[in-house]
Length: 397
Image 1: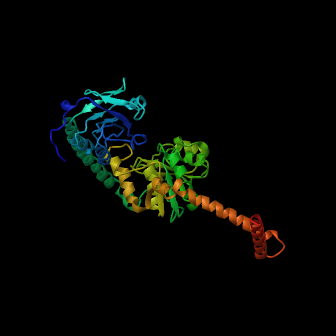
Image 2: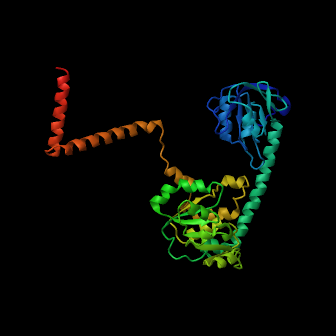
Image 3: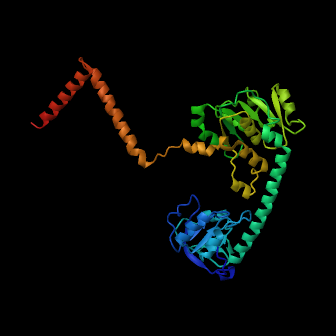
């Protein structure tokens, strides 16, 4: 990556062009042309997004968010500045409401003031090369420090919880209920209800064992399912769900003390404790399924990938990493299952449905005609065809 001194913040001047909404759902993304001002909403803009913008040669890129949050050393801003494209960031969400895609000429002053026609619609921050390089270098150092700490914590956790991770020591015994079965673990993440709806065809076809984590157990019941297991703090779950016949597993500290045991006793519901230093009920549910030889485990409501670790997201803890690696190839995210059950419709399939409708109609006519006469099925069809042919012939004689 070239680190020349082109296009510093002092070099930025007013830029003009039609404001094009190039956010992920924006209508202007396909209309973007050279000389337009590309409006994006891309925190920590990726290399791929930067390549798209460079190929379309906008007069400037105006970011609703920041080009770099400081969490990861992303190359996108460096690529854009290398292409001599002026950058303005942190324009704020109000920018979305300030213009209609391509309707009027826009302008951005050197200080980041954004105009749409004669109106001032936002205040952005101009971004020069020195700013981008400084942010990139500090992000590199911050990421290296976080990764050292993160994987150090993972090593210490593996040392203390080795018996659990290696041999399943402390995992409750549930018999053979999970062995060889497909399992869905529903966590109570922000989109878990929609992810559960996306799994309806999978659940209908395979009848997997359902494990509800915390309040997600109520979501299972509300959707018409019966969880086989509930893992988590019972204070997060309705009484009726706890009494619904599921086996309740309470996370407990290494000494066996479990939060919510008093409520379980008041309800007269049996429960099993899961003593461990791990703090996430979702990971305990996954370990439960994996240890008891589930054939396939689908996780919904708690996505995880390496980018989450880099970005220091709350759910990307060392215990999450260790648990997901422990299950290995048996663990599948709900979005992958959703995509397997999604059939592309659209105009390309319309002719097939039309043809199918015609064939069904023809088959119905043949069936009615064949069974409607006094002779055999074949004779009835022949008689009907002959009558039809004679009628047509009479029209031309």
